[in-house]
Image 1: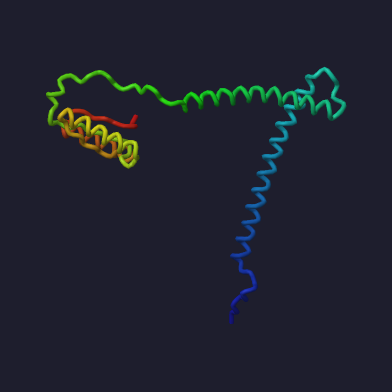
Image 2 (image 1 turned 45 degrees about the horizontal axis):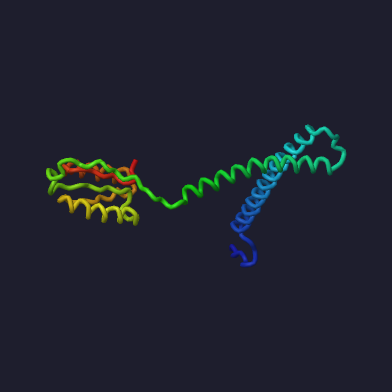
Length: 181
């Protein structure tokens, strides 16, 4: 007659999962230790390289520490220049846009297109920017006597291809792709 294990006695399953957790934890600790050793090796090789190039013998900790500090300062100078360049680029790209290049070439013989349809195919119709573009475009094409058909690209190449094929089959006056390379 088999007896049921007592609730206090661990089953094989609990023992194995605990062993896996310990092994996983030990693996993580070993990985962190290896990374720390790698970083320490990198920093010691750069400071020992800079101390060997100094003219004074490095007999004390103060000499090697000062040469390490000078190499860090020279590396910091390069980093500071990079940070300054990045900040300048961010400032330039964050500046208010005063002029937006808009196509200015007129479409000739618009009257011949009256009543035809222009297909607007955004990458994903649910993105608010594309909804605004569609509404603005609709107002513009209606003033020219055309219709606008919006076809959702669904952020998928096959969805975009289906929209383009629909526009071609419909003999669209134009196809406007938005955010689609």
